Amino acid sequence: MTHSGTEGLKMNVCVLISGIFLMLQTCTAMAEEASTAPVDDSYARSIVEKADLVRFPSEGFQVDIVINTSQPDKQVEMRKYRVLQKGNENTVVMVTEPASERGQIILMKGRDLWVFMPEVSQPVRISLAQRLTGQVANGDLARANFAADYNPKVLRDETINGENYVVMELTAVDRSVTYQKVVYWVNKKNAWPLKAEFYSLSKRLLKTCSYENFQSLGGKVRPTRLVMEDALRGGEKSLLEYSEMKLRDLPEKIFTKDYLKKLAE
Image (cartoon, rainbow, N blue to C red; front, side, top):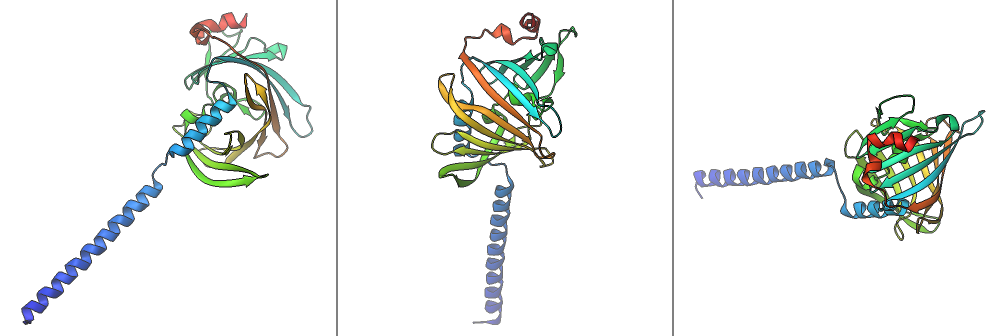
């Protein structure tokens, strides 16, 4: 082989090696990009949707909620609410106790929230994340639609007390939802929620929630007690107890700002 032929062969080999190296770099970059892109796991989404239906009916319904909030060295504070909900986008939350706050009503349309107070002529806009009472945010009562508000992905499986659970990370679709991230444990067999961790935008754990006392409520077995505990201040928690759930045919006019005064009467 001539000198020029040898040089040409060396050049071809170098070009081939460079091409392979470039291809490997490209594949690596694509893999890294895929790993950092938001993941919406269809399997995870189906589980979240089923768990949403375990917690609340898809039809119109009414339910009474008692919230007892305890803090160290303070007397337990009790509040009562009646919630009217139709689908995932329409909710009315009425204060029934204490008597001094009776007539206050929260209206949710989609992710928009207003509070009506009898002494104020017009409803006031509020946020889902704003605290309602104790460890309970407005969105905890007015909107608990995890499937629509979060992009879920499976983190791992866990076995707890002999039951198999899917542990999922739920990432908020935007900043308007109640929490920016939720870690959620759901039973693989029956889609019963077990517990959840709620995080802020800065990824700080705000509070935890456990779903307890599963009983027949509104024609289906559901958690009738939720325990929400402050992760920042130990000993502060709110106990939510659900009762008297009834399926109701609720007209659209109930979920309008103009109708709030009539509900308060």
